[in-house]
Image 1: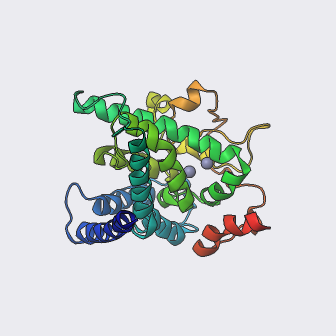
Image 2 (image 1 turned 90 degrees about the horizontal axis):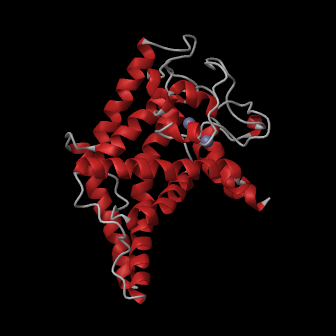
Image 3 (image 1 turned 45 degrees about the vertical axis):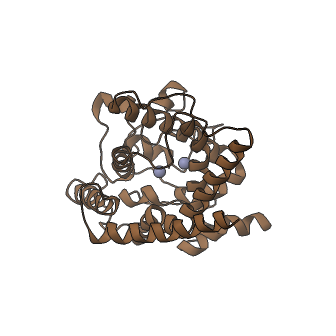
Length: 291
Ligand SMILES: [Zn+2]
Ligand SMILES: [Zn+2]
């Protein structure tokens, strides 16, 4: 038991020190400053080349989404996620120990070239996330959490990280075992994380970008706006589930881009009664369940 308490304390102190150092010492391998820099760059593009010219620079929910961005990217980890995941990993390893196993690495990729390791991690993680995202739309209990992300009415870069913290737990948990089997840890490769954050920001930005023929591989603002559209094609739970890659939607027939969707109304049915503030949005799914 002591071991688990120490894991929690180490996670807290370790993360607190880490966060402090991140903020105080900018560097090229620093998440905090990369997030700020990427956000400023994409926002600047929105200001200079807006797709919907009428949309305000400080669009609806700009500050709310900005808070979500820092909460989900940094604070949630600080408060709970690091501690929970370290305990889970520790417990999982103890569980493996019962069977005399030290780890579940089934495929040894450490002898591969680094670029091939990156590519495998990135493609595999993205495919797992695409499946998780589909599940968030399919199962009503999960959809209650995912509604926070779909309550965006005006798209802008910060909407990317507007989501319920339970999503972080779901995504990371589902990814853990497959990634651990090829020897990757929960800590993403820095470069992969920065790349996916940049594409995610762009997907939600007020920009008209499709990347030309690369649109069949990379998700983009025109494709993702249809993911947020209020009106879905008949008989579906959603379309365009891609996070960074769009290729899964094309492969599995969930791609849907009837037109460019510039002024398409966003959200879901019953939006009017959905809470508007951070606290009420993150507590909503729990209260909802009790009813
Ligand atoms: Zn969604
Ligand atoms: Zn989105």
